[in-house]
Image (cartoon, rainbow, N blue to C red):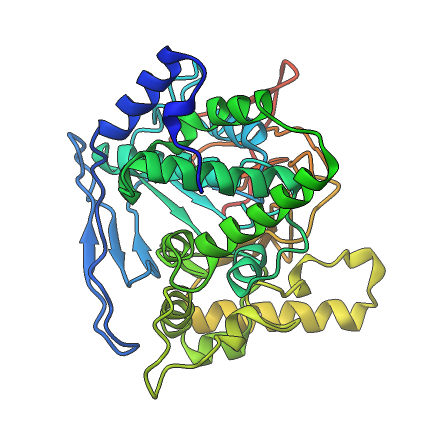
Amino acid sequence: MMMSGCFMAAAAASVSLRLSCSLPVHHQTQPPCSNLHCTSTTITTPASSSTRSPVVVNGHPPTFVSAPGRRIVAVGDLHGDLDKARYALEMAGVLSRDGSNLWVGGETVLIQLGDILDRGDDEIAILSLLKSLDIQAKANGGAVFQVNGNHETINVEGDFRYVDSGAFDECVDFLEYLEYCDHNWEEAFGGWFGVSNRWREHRQASQNNWGPWNLVKRQKGVIARSVLLRPGGPLASELARHPVVLKVDDWVFCHGGLLPHHVAYGIERMNREVSHWMRGLNECDDCPQFPFIATRGYDSVVWSRLYSRDMLDLEDYQIDQIQSILEETLQAVGAKAMVVGHTPQTTGVNCEFNCTIWRIDVGMSSGVLDSRPECSQGKSGGCAKAAALLCVKFIEGEQCIISGNLLKSFERVI
């Protein structure tokens, strides 16, 4: 039996939790896609008081985005590290630094490249925070997009090999909180990032170190995670809102890498099939039982490391082959550059092939390389790199300082 929130030790904390459940969360829902051949709908975000055109989103889940005149920022793998996630978002200029969890990015468009799950304790809290920021960003003419990575897909498959014990505990805590919120998913999920730490503290205060009880706790965590992340489960259905490939203006974002045969198959088709599978809606005759091309195999969208390999380890003919594949892919999809995560870059964010491929996973999570987020960016139209995030397009004159030294913008225009 799940423990109710009314067992919270402190009355003030209990009242605070109840208030967080009672506050409505305004969410822009996506129309259901009854089959894999449904027509894409255009979603337009308000342009606030700006004279810029609004952000326009096509596809369910989002696949093609027009973001005229917007600053676009990409953030790599976060792997359950809420503190590092906050720090990266603060450095990106989209999250308030005072702990109020407010969107301060104005009309910025933020893209997170997947792998929020595994290797850290605060996975659901990070997902919840990004959801809250997206709601706030839309109200200001901006937007937040997430791209599912291989660790999202393997968890929906039921592969929990890389799950930390604290993440299992978070699943148990969140299900209890969901029950406390009368199973109102939007309110519980939307507010979890603000109360998750208190629920953890309560659990740790009442923790029993008796060996057999720890085994029971582990089993309880596996069951809770399975309930949340099985195809059709509430958290899997939340992940189903996000694509595996996203094209924003003339930039392509994906976790592992997009290849020519993916484009030929259809990126919107792949996104729909993965979303359909995550929502547990693959019973129809023409629905693939498993979206193999996007989520399985070394050359799938979420697993490919072709573009992230260390070029120093390759022969010239191999480098030429990779560049040729990249150029063919970008030409086929109508983009000038691609941004990927998935493979930690020990030298920080970097680009290859005349900056047509950007690798932005730096293993910032304490469960990976524990690298420190840093930022480097230049003026509008410039090429920029960062140690934890990539600023794709910039507001004119915007600059960033590291260690007191002003970094010069790159001269070459992408």
